[in-house]
Length: 139
Image 1 (cartoon, helix red, strand yellow):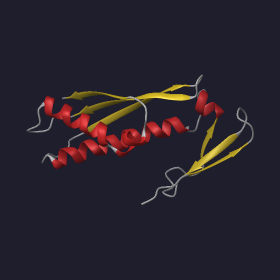
Image 2 (cartoon, one colour):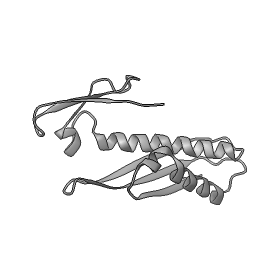
Image 3 (cartoon, one colour):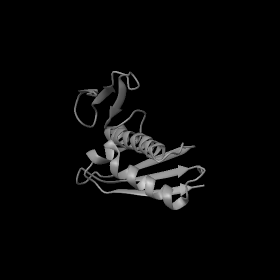
């Protein structure tokens, strides 16, 4: 299986503009620019998309790990915070903050282990070479 995305850019770095599209059309000529990447503006940026991909992948991985252990996930909510050093043009790390509802038969310690395993084994985590940290709220 292959997944694709397309980007188009026109102009110089600071005044130029681009669009990002995916075959699913979830991103359909979605704008991005210097302002959306380095300041704040309407549109997206590559770092935001990496954080979104990681949050989605990790959360699905937690659900799958629970299912393999014989449990059904209740509400799982993950916020991924990607740290960028724009001086050195480097992503320095990603923090995953998972908030989950209690699941019958799963202790807080067991859930923490499941979440740690999901963090290590989700496809996006495996693709990244930066430190990944995790906090879990299980209530």
